[in-house]
Length: 298
Image (cartoon, rainbow, N blue to C red; front, side, top):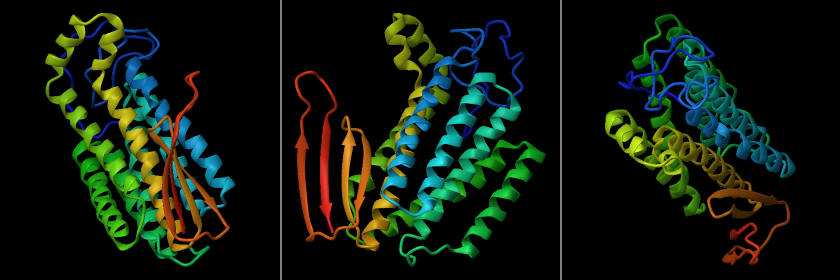
């Protein structure tokens, strides 16, 4: 992903498979250091977090017959992963724009879900869809013409702030799962801190990376960790929206986490007494999946 940064000051190797860098942004990972076919290896493969979890999210959303807006949100996350992978793979300006535009449109999906939390069943807000479409189309075309990162930052930041404010309102207006409220916020904050360290202290990070043996040096790829934390946060954000919507529709919800960090929602049509039960299912000693199960019956 590419919110904003300046060119890093690292001494790069010869141009790799994709030719000279044409993007306006670069990151604190030596270009073509791992393979000549991938400009930024770790920043590229870390985008799998934007692809694999959303595929499961789409499957579960389809199974539970939730509003299609949540499926579109997951598609938006996948597009972020594909755009970001393309950008870090090539470091070309066109791929950079794919990365940034996918972030803009996906955030609009998230915002729409939050804005329509308390809408009637099987309803669509045509006016809001038109407003978001016009906003994104104008921002996208303007950015393509001007190629000014600051313009994208303002357009993306505006949507993000509105989304956060709306999310807080939804969380306070009903008895939703607090875990799904705080978990993505903590992940977003952690990712933001790592992203800034990677940008502001690249030379120090690189020195530390060079001083560590190969397996440990990977841990200093902070922009790759930014991808991991933001990818999980996006998934949790959609789960929060879907859970809030199910509460409004009075559907029975079960929230469970895969390996303790990836939340999933199960929605049932049978009505249950309004109780809250938390239980932990430990994995067997073979080391298989561990589930921490939060059951909220509506």
